[in-house]
Every structure is written in structure tokens, then in C-alpha cells.
Image 1 (cartoon, rainbow, N blue to C red):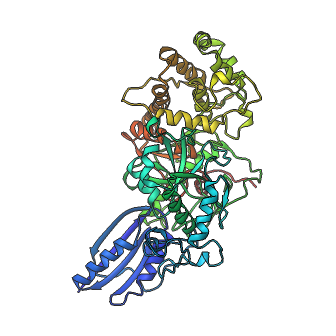
Image 2: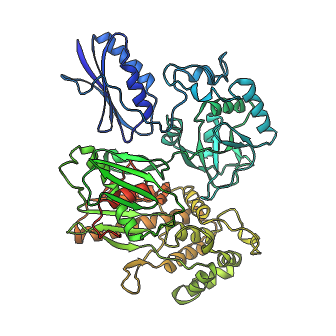
Image 3: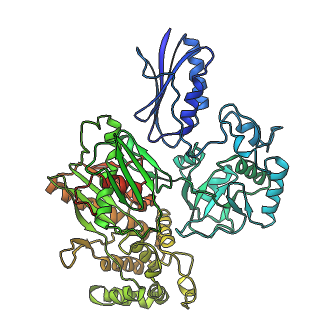
Length: 608
């Protein structure tokens, strides 16, 4: 008889894993104990070799891949960690299908195809559909016919689908439901990790660049990139299969409730992997180090610490909360440090270790900053991204004066419509911070004639402008088309701000160098767009090395929703990761909740 422990290590709780562990307590022949400890789901069993091998095969089949799964192992042990007490279940993202029932209702060759009431003893996924009329093949086929006729389809959970037109979106990306995964790589540039994530248990949204080849063109794909997802509930699974049989590869979707959107983040050790960009539901971290404050409110999140449990609750985004950009960036650094210490399991005795850390916080809504900890473990600001003028006319006027006047004049001769488009751009109409990477990227994108609106066709102020988000995304996706290792060196020189406001970047020099490279090669937009990202990462690497020489830096924390720019993240990993450990907190989103969590550990006098 052997005692064997099966462990699945996860960066976050996976409710369906807990549900499966509880089900294994009912094993008919083996004495099973279970536990959830320090991010690991544990199943322990004692028995003969043959029975244990069969159990291992069953576990491998039952536990579908999760985006939060970081590792697994099977090992013989002497004593048990688990008990026969069920693991408490979270109601977040209830799973209404699993490997036991999917092939019954989701396979078009199955006699049960389309029957959303197909009972499943594992996930019990039929329960949400018992009060829904459209729960059978005939009704869902009628739904598909309406969609193919051009109607907007609204499902029981509020999810809406359209065949030809994207739904309104504010962040520059339309959402697509993939109906035929086999044709995915014909339309989108995806790597293996992205495809696996789309197929994972959570069915997250993933950003993807459209391919530029005319061989697989689709007239519906008019943007540079989209946010993709696979079917994540029974009704969508059946609809997508019916549409796939009709030759439909994807449809536009508007989820009935916020869905998880992930981005791949570089890191060291187990820190690399998928991270949530922003969150919408309450979160907890246990056990959390004892903070300096029991409560904090920041970035529209409320953080509370009680008895080693850190609870995070989203607040109404229309509360008018005033954000201090320094506090956000400093708190984001501290929030990124939490996961490593929680995973170590010694949080009760040790405060949060913040020494020798730098942090990059890039947020679309807030000022981007490079911060660091000094010898007294205070978090200090080294650099703030430049605040651009509110109006494009003021940006152009600044370029036409001083040291960039000559290159701007030459650019105006060759690309007059481009500068006319820049002059009409109005940052005041956008929700993004004018001291964000998105704002600076939007200017670079306009200078490269990127975005949906062609420079030669923007002759009237009555036409809508591309959003800051869509322009920044266009620059990213264009840069990802670049082939080769060499890229132009875009300038990001440091400047000292007035009134002792610290250091920033001379954005005039940055845009001037973009214009100079385009004048040298007008058709090299991917080359220059890549250089904008790569050069920025190189400059930040140099500044962090400077901080290392003065203060000693061992690790760099990455946070902020602009880290969802996968090209930027890749460049930061190459430029900074070769000399410094990269940290992210995968237990928290990149922006929002992590700032509120970090605020509990920030040295400052609290406002009353």
C-alpha cells in the first residue's frame, strides 16, 4: 500500500478544481483526503499501484487546463496534509459544462446535441438552463438563423451576438466569439500559449493581431486587432457549433457580464504567465502580511485587512474619487510584491519585504511612472511620463518651435495631411491620462498614418477621431509586424520638470525622431513602430541600471493596464529581464485592485 499526493499548483483559486476535489471524497474504493493550501489543490490516496495509476489517469482527464495552473506533481508521502472536509466553493464564474457532459450536448454527432438540460453529475451544468426556453437544438437553430439573417441576438444571460457589425466599444478593441477554432490562425497572429489560453477552463478574452495576408481576408475584419474568446457557456457552445457548420468562423459578441481578459506577462521563476488586466469581482489574499493600515481606498477599490486576510471590493467608478498619481504608482509596486511573500507562507511573522525594488506603472487612465525604494524602504518617484498638451494644434505648434522646427518643416512638406490630422486631434475628449504611454503612442501612430481614418481623408472636423486606445493599439499591432532584430533608435531623453516636479521625458525629441525616421523611409511603419517600443524599453533599462548603481536594485515590478501591450512587455523582458528579476502579482489584476492592496503597506499619513 502506498500513500500518494497529487498536487496542482495555481496562481489563483480555481473554483471548478475545488468542486472536483470535493467529488473525489466520494471515491468508492480509495480512502481520499483533500486540501487547498498555499495555492495548491491536493488529493491524497492510499492504495495498491494499479488503483493509484487508474486514479492518476482519472485526475488527468477530469482537471481541465486552467490559465492559473502553474505546475503539478505526484509524489509518495508518509503523512497526509488533507482531510475529508470539503473545500469551500466560490460562486465566481460557475462552470456549466465539463469534459463529462461537453461531448453529449456540444458534439453535433451526439443524439443529445443541443440539449442544454443534459444532466451532468460532475458540474451539474443543466441547472441554470431549466428555466430558459431556448434550451434545445430546434430553438438554438432558429437563433442561428436569425443571426445569419442580420438580426442582433440576445441570449438568456444578456450576451448579445451580431454577424457583421461590432458592438460599440470604448477601449479600441471589438470582441469576437470564435466559432471555428480550426481557422483561427488563418485570420489572427497567435502563438501556442494564446491558443491554449483561449481553450482553457476559464475561456478568457485574449487580444490578437489580425494577419495582413490577402489570402485569408474577411471584409468584417477592418481593425488591426481584436479581443477573442471561445464559447464559455452551454448556449454559446451549441450556437457556435451550428454556425461553424454553416461556414461562419466568428461573430461579434457583447458579453452579458464582464469577462476575464488576460495578457501574457514576462517574469522570473513562476511569475511569468497569464495575468488579469482589470478585475470586476471581489478578491481575497490569504495569508497576507500585516499591513501599516487596516483599510485603504484607491483606484475605485476598497482594501481591508483582518486576521491575515486581505479583502478587495470594487467600488462604483462614478464616485468621483480623486487619484494621486504618485500614490497609485507606489502602491502598485507594493501590490506586485505580495504574491511572492504569500507563496512563501511566512507572512504572519514578517512585514512586506520592499527593499531593493523598482516599479514600472503604466496606466491608460493615470500618469505613468518609474518608482523605486530607497535605503529606508520608502518608495520614491524617479520619473513621470510627459503630460502632452490637450489639443493636437498645441502639439504641432510646440514641434514647429525650438529644436524640432527643422524636421517638422520637412515633414510638413512631404506629409501635410498627416500633420493636419495631428492638429485636429483633441485629447481633452478622451478619458486617458495625457501622461500615459497610450497618449504618446497615439501621437506616434498619427505620424505614421495608422488607425482607421486615413490622413488624406480627414478634411473636416465633423468626422469622428480615432480614440487614443485604438491608435495605441494600432501602433502596437503594426510594430508586431516587424521582421528582424534591428530597429530605429527613437529618442527618449530625460528632462527636469519645473517647480521641483522631478524628471520626465522630452516628448518633442521623441516625436521628432519618429518624423525623422519616416522621412528617411516613408514605407517603414512596422520598423518604426517596433522601434518606438524597443527604444522605450531600452531607455527604461538604462534608468533602472542608474538606480541600481545608487540604491541597489534586485527586482523590477511590472503593473498597470498598459502592460497589456504584449509588444512592450516583450521588449521590457528582453531589455530589463536580462539583468533584473521581473515581478508581477498574478493573484491580482495588473491595475486597480493591486493598487488598493498595495496602499495598505504604503508609508504615508492617512487622509481623514
